[in-house]
Length: 111
Image 1: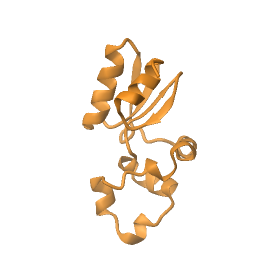
Image 2 (image 1 turned 180 degrees about the vertical axis):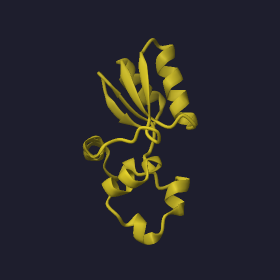
Image 3 (image 1 turned 60 degrees about the vertical axis):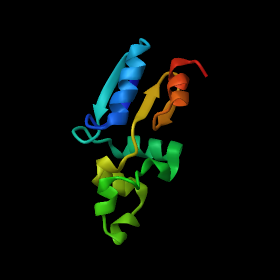
C-alpha cells in the first residue's frame, strides 16, 4: 500500500502511480489541489525534505512576487499547494520526493 501525493495533471505523478501499480502495489492518489495537505502533514514533509519540497521551477513559483518567495516554506505551501514538488510517495518501505528508478526500487523493496 502506498499514498501518492500530487496532481492528476502531473506527468511524473501519473508515471509513478502506473509504475508502482504495475508491480502490484496498491496506490491511493491524493490530489493536493482538491484536497490540500494540512499544516501537520506539511511540517512532517518539510522536516523530511527541507526546502526541496518547494518547487522553484513551477509556474506558480514564477508568478509569485519576490516578497512572497521569501515566506517560510510552510506558509508558501499552505497558500499555494501546487508549489509542492511532486510526487511524494509514502509506502511502508519509504517516504520519498520526486520520481526515479531508484525511488521506485525503494518502494518495492528492491534497493
